[in-house]
Image (cartoon, rainbow, N blue to C red; front, side, top):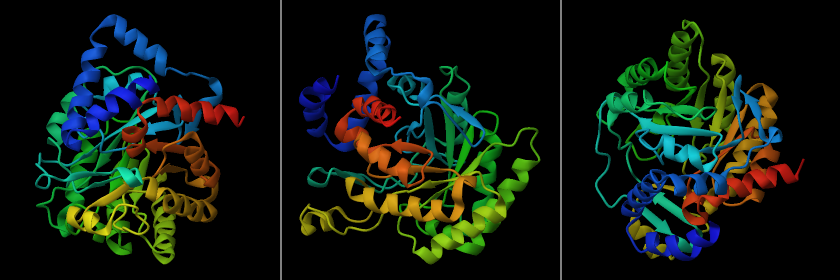
Length: 348
């Protein structure tokens, strides 16, 4: 399967615009799964189950620690298909209360020399109503679902809590955990919600609602890699004060340091969040910094620049309990999931 992706499918996909390639990939995969023989072959190719891979984190049982990061399946339309690739958990979104188109195209760019992506998608999604309908469809057993929630672009920051609350209430019975996304660089002003006062108020409100539920759901915070140590210390304080279940470290970066792609080409692309291999080192640094200060009490999901088993193990050894991939999936193909699981087992 790695050979097929690397030498046949990837050249075709990379000849297309990134968004077109993304849609085509999902259409082809969904089509293949409707053919019984192909579906069985795919499942056997990607499947790797082992009790040593299982984890209990945030009080949830994960069949393995490798997850799909938010952004790949914004509307939860492809959860059933993606579960066939051997993920232990899938995160949909970011979802906002109302449907929104996101930023103008083009808004997704490849940097092949850096094995990276730049995106300024802008929380494009079909809104809560569509996602709720998707989540009512049956899902394969043992695949946990996370709901990554955000605010609509038109919602001012002082009213942002209402958007997060609306998403939380609508998805509460349909997802296994929540992720509060205040760290995307592609919605104007959103990262201002990472500041200590607004963030503590938002998380406190969500946790108050959560604790009133019969069975509270884990709520996680997704943070940017561009925070200073002082800002990370604030995050630690807020997480402890609000008794948050965990952290996802990290989102995309606005930094362009150290890229192999010519500066003029990067500048021509314009603003957006950078993901992929260049983010690996900084994401690991953030994980390690937070883990030292939070210990085992607050689990971390590590994401950023994972494109090999060694990269995933680096995140786990730095203190992450679970990992997520996205850009690595684009450059390495779906075989990456199984390779990561094999790498984890080899260290046992």
